Image (cartoon, rainbow, N blue to C red):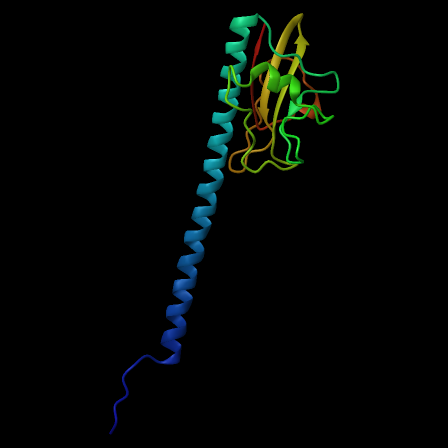
Length: 163
């Protein structure tokens, strides 16, 4: 009687199924790690921008003025840090290169993921916010202070200062 060595088709299919399952679990973990890394970069970018704003304030005793059409936001459409009229010269001129190497952009940088800077008057004081529009892993909305910024200012993370 001949004895055949090797694996049966069922055994091979079970092994392939197990390998596929393990691979999908690993890739899901990698995607979550990438999203967390992008969120960490977002906070780092905003803190760097806030430091640049504070350095400028210590030199000039004022924060950069935002245009009347709204604040500046990073944007994917070829005009980063636009003021909704595709003009980033105000914020860029005020901060780059003396206070920060370049204005940061969101790692995803699309219509749902961006940063925003705005200077407004709140309680008689000039106040600014720098904010992250959307986190990927832990969206906790934070109001930067007691001013009511309205519904257009719902951000996942915000920080600011006042003159």
